[in-house]
Length: 197
Image 1 (cartoon, rainbow, N blue to C red):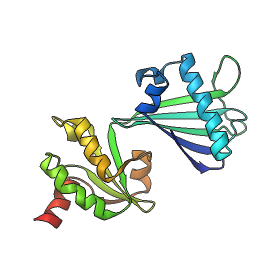
Image 2: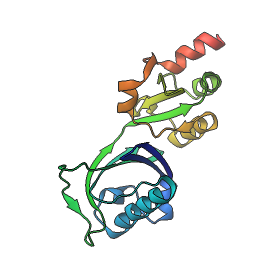
Image 3: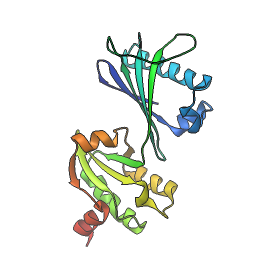
């Protein structure tokens, strides 16, 4: 579990699928209203309090984004006065409003462009020419859509990406809105042709 404070009343939590399986929760169960998911949210709020000083001392809104082959990004926002929160835990511990979204994007972040360049011959030999290259908050991002990976061994693909970069907890919506779009399509092919041909 990775926690990051976004601002005074908002935090981001990244849960890998390993984090979920350690708690005996499947990806499908994350979308259900069951006690072990309630307990996971309680644990996350306690950890956020300990690590970030983020106190869920009132209503909160929770957005959950599923990222293929990586995990879940959870955005927790304290509700402002006057905001309505519809859902409530049985014991009244936390009132919450939950929004769920499943991303079809695979997003990896890299701390420098050299790592992206080094990755491209490996992906090219793997049969992946696609992808988009963006820059945001001093990092480079490569995004792939589900259809880019048709017929590709997804586990091996993710393992290869993980050698050079990290799964990103930045959502595609944030990247599209605020990121600098460097190469809009076939990024791997274009980088490979520029540096290796």
